[in-house]
Length: 215
Length: 215
DNA sequence: AACGTGTCAACTGTCGACAGTTGGCAGTTT
DNA sequence: AAACTGCCAACTGTCGACAGTTGACACGTT
Image (cartoon, rainbow over all chains, first blue to last red; front, side, top):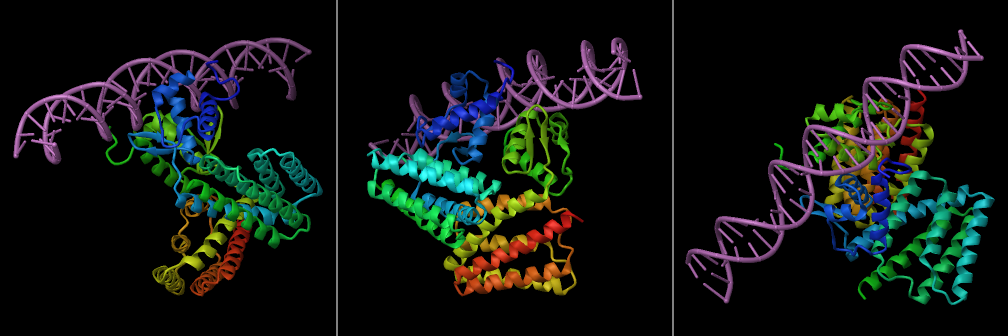
């Protein structure tokens, strides 16, 4: 439809492009041709440009003047700096969750952990989806909208970086334990411990990502 | 010049608009008319639209479909949530600064503090510029580019919120003391204390902002 | 053969115009 | 007089086209 029925063309383009970038359909390092992608999406360059700029503001694309938009390739230093940001945000979220969580929040967290364990015990690889769900649930319990929004953006960039994670069983097991310990600290309202555990958890994930980056 | 000589028209528009929003030249709650502002800046609607979207992604404007861009008006809850984010980021920055700072960083921090005190003792009101300079210097010492970038964005939003701050002498005095204490902790490499002091400092600033919001 | 130079295609940056939607105003009805 | 309905101006969303810049290729020079 030409008129914006539910979402503007730019908004739709953002969703499609974001998906293509995050799934690696548009591989890191590649350029985004405006006219080509615009025709491919059946829209004009205007809305597509807005979509590109939006994704750039989220860190999913980097803009080079007169050259266009590129999918950023990650360096180890990038990963470290990004995880410093993520740690700052999620540790704060863990503290807030520990002091603000309701009983409903707690049940939700425990549910996600239980499902993750079932999945893991069934021999299935720990899907990244469940890890995201856990962190998202924790974020809801923290009830700090601005922190939540920033964490969402950072996690997106982390997804962009991970080429092939989730394939190291010991790491998965440790992550599950971390999650359980986090829930326990949050259940006890122990903000300090929640923060400490979260920091250790993210430190482990970061290390894992760095090693998998160096093959 | 029609061709992008140094910066694209959209980039220039971003700078001009940001200034106008932050200084209150475009008051909170008001709408941004695309054709009007475009003519006023001597550019077309295309680049201006990009500039508007960019500022919206920074939180300096809020977009309403088919209605346009508005300068957001702050509610107390907004201020609280925003300071939760700022606290998370700047406490982490303080910790990192304490463990990574060089001697040059330390001198710079002390210089800013000294200038602030001179300014204060001379009867001048503590200019927000010096407060920003202090936090910026601390951020440089932390050497965490992603955290620095996010803090910059958050501080912008804080500037947008403050209608008339910096006019309470006791608050200014306390802030100066906070800064000095922060520098001391950073000088000692005491990350935990740096974080604690930063948290107290921001808590005070937030409270001050909330009271000045309620007149 | 290596290097510097001129030319060119491809792409981005920008513009003006059209189409669709929104909120408000006038007119009418109860 | 209050509420509802239909119309209208203003503005945003979108499009196609033009202008300027960039990187690369081919050519000529040393």
